[in-house]
Amino acid sequence: MMDQFMQERQLQASIEQAFAQKEFQLYIQFYVDAANFAVVGGEALSRWKHPQKGVLLPSMFIPLMEREKMISRLGYYCLKEVCFFLEGLLKEGVDTFFVSCNFSRDTFAAADFVQKVQEIMNGFTFPRELLILEITESVSVRNAAQIRQNIIALKKYGVRVALGDFGEGFTSFYDLQKYPIDGIKLDKGLVDHVTTPIGTAILKAMIQVGHELNMTILAEGVETDEQVRALQEIHCDVIQGFRFSHPMPQWEANVQIIQNRRT
Image (cartoon, rainbow, N blue to C red; front, side, top):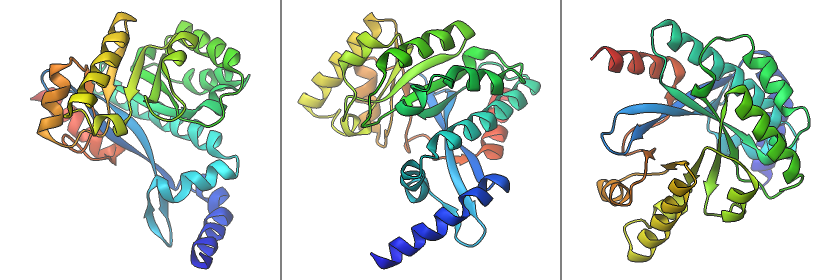
């Protein structure tokens, strides 16, 4: 426990330097079309390239940044990196690949959230619909009215909005009534059981409701062919998971996307 405490103190002391030195790096994990497995987009993820500790996974620093009330700053930092990534693809003639960028509900509920997003995006020319802002799980569900207002404003701006971690924890069908979202990401905890009769029935019902509301349904954490076949049978739209790709540095993702376009 003491070792863990000391490691966290060391990381806490170096967060400011990490932002200044751009040590937080953009990684992309691909999304594929569930019907034909074509790569259609990706999720933006963060890795901390620490000068002494090497590459740190989110589990090593996200909880710390949440406690230090710095998770919003990381979200905006990541958004800007995603914008550069999409702009680079556009210059290579790729104008259909989309990227989802995660923000906590607390960040999404800020009164100036839309303004900050637009200030970042206004410097870029890629089609706005290629960016999806994903609302992630959070214990705090304060100010649902402000979140709804922000979603409406972002959709008018052209950005799409999705609800992550759906079906587990604090997300529920009630969220679909409150927020005019474009899609939902089915939580891995549910996808893990998609090959069981109960798991199939639950996910089938969720997907049917989502489609009736004109939403795109994405399943995360897909690792086996059996899960893929089960998701295809219940008409899931998009799949993400180690079965198809692992998170990779943005430069590597860029190369693969361009190569796929040329083949």
